[in-house]
Length: 295
Ligand code: ADP
Image 1: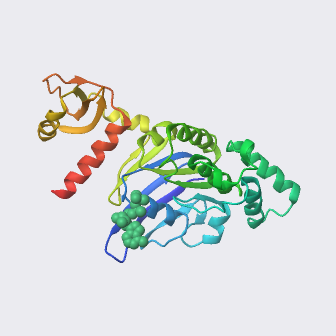
Image 2: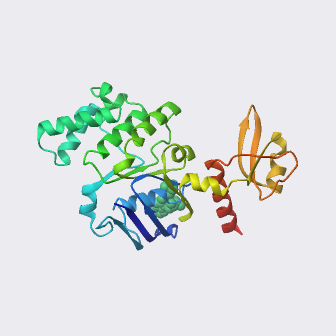
Image 3: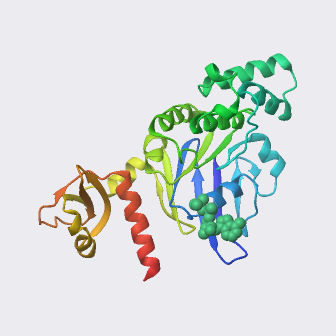
């Protein structure tokens, strides 16, 4: 089972080209779709979930034509949108049970077993009797995953799930997601590089509606081998370095910026070679993409 997106384009009525000839083959496992805000990730996710139309292009999941066979798709789809409402005054257990009824699981003992298993899987079993009103952001997201898994989906889409979660909650969420990938096509859309770094075996970077890189994170990192140099500088120097080098990332270390630059050969001047990180790949792609478009 593979999700194949071929030449997908979408221009909104205001003229914004949200998707421009997107082609991606997404195998089973965790796929990271990484891109800055406004890149077109949600438009792509909603189109794959058959919630909105594309102008041109096709999407297939196994033998399902996603854009035409919407009902068939929905039977095998789990979708956790960027924002979703929950009834605040009922418990997770009751609401999940209710959703299971809506999904057509009518046999009560089968349903109880399923609800229990999903609450365990998402690490919510101990808080299953609590009203959702009292849930933290991370608990709500994990509940979202539990409901998205009710129909044992073949395709699971999670759109920006970790935005706004603190590091502990993000980790708990990673643990839940990492269990799912083996038998399911899981697409994780995110602007957070760590999400992809921790979880994904395949990835693509999109920017301004276009795929600017796709592949396996490890192979992609290899492509920047011996090309990333680092140096710790003074804050006031940042501007001048940005003018003279391809600065692809900057991080504060003990109050001082440490910059990473992209260079085919040793730039001298106190720079030292460093291992490329996924952040470097991401920023170098976004950087060159944005620059080439503004030229
Ligand atoms: P992302 O999820 O990566 O932040 P989106 O898919 O939400 O990106 O948006 C891509 C672009 O399309 C943005 O420029 C956004 O402003 C625009 N856009 C999104 N939805 C609509 C819409 N319904 N009508 C018009 N423009 C939209």
